[in-house]
Length: 319
Image (cartoon, rainbow, N blue to C red; front, side, top):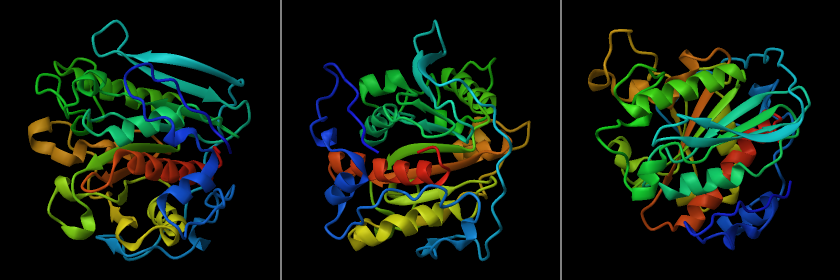
């Protein structure tokens, strides 16, 4: 499915790279042996267990559970529009909504949760231009807009959005209020998938198990109806077309579950990342994707994020 660039004004000018259309051009940019086919519609829902075997996993589950059949979705009239989260505040940011007018799954895509991870938020801006085939596509390209403007991870006084789910509308931390609005939005649309685009510094394959600074080229799936096979199926569809060092490693995020009600940001850590959203939004499966920044330029990171997004959205038939 072709797509067009989203005008960026003067903020960034890397769009010539993204003028290429469809999965074939993106795969060609990522590896000389890449497959040219777009995601096969309906490849995952239902029948996820019949997909190709997963690549080597880091801490993954020993056995697979069958995928759940998605619940009946509300059919929203076809249209493209914007909504605003945290409206009327300095942290206000735009949500792009595209409704297909056809019954299907809804997906929410996050970029810019951390402001110094440009591959994620630039790729999300591109995804916001895509037209869903069924269901709805919601994209928040610049979730932490002020951090992006300053090119920092976040600010201490507003909190780390990826440590504050499911959010709290009464919180003193702006990003905890933002997390609450994102959670409510996903619930309102009955989203089946939350795809959160991030970047780490080093590649996981080079320093496995050493923390969040070395999560590059990983796909992590949290609790939800599509666990455990969804992440491995994405990687299995893409890895043959990528150089060996760049292939995605699958990690299991289900141990990062919903914290106790009394838990605080200081004590819950990654248990309040977007990977916990499956415990807060019925029917949703969260997937967190990390690209490595070390020795991998931003255009390549964008291309890889777009490959993952096309594959994931194709597998739930949104594209």
